[in-house]
Length: 294
Image 1 (tube, rainbow, N blue to C red):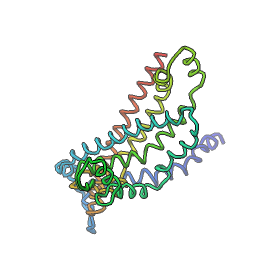
Image 2: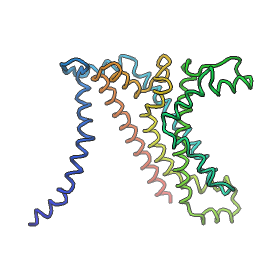
Image 3: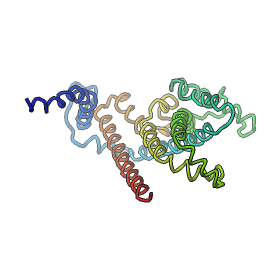
Image 4: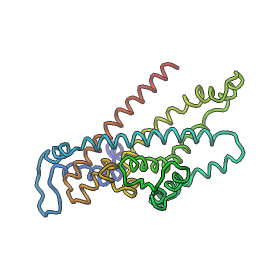
């Protein structure tokens, strides 16, 4: 009777465990298995050991890794900085504050595909708004096709990703700011602290855990971002916007090289796992130091 009672909680966990295995563990295991094969459209698949991984690093994959890191780093940094700035402005005691909070939502509410198509039209050199404005103010003398050149296309994809991501980041920071006790601000104000000093010594330190959490989540989302780049450039021109996700999709889906695509997916998983582990380790150390200091 006692044994049955002890086993009952584990029996309740079985459905959740089975579901986790079905939707997480099994696809991961299958991807690992495929990465060691030459799976493609051929009916017969053979195991090739580490050949797919060797081939990846002989094909200039390190350039794609560097481009992905640069793209994700710039995009996340801009989203965090602009999101923090917008949150501070939305948290300020100004008339019409509720209206401003609503106006910041559309980039997040609008479906991503529609938002990206809108930016695609604005980047168009012939009838796009951005090229037209630059010609009117005299910065360029003729229509400029942003997606035709590597650097401008790379920057354009970052701008679009930042535009879509800033509302969520700013609302997250705004919610965190409103959880800070007003008594702290009142005490600082009584001591004669100005706005910037109160932000630097009260708001920012108390926001650090929220900033760290959002930075980690945003880094993972941005690293895995596919739809924005694919809709705007499909990884072009000449691979200037091809990130690891885009490269994996092209290899596995467009070229039907499932084995090589699975190997790329495994590398992305390992890369993100290593990044997350280091980030969490550093965050825990920072938190412990803060607690010890207090």
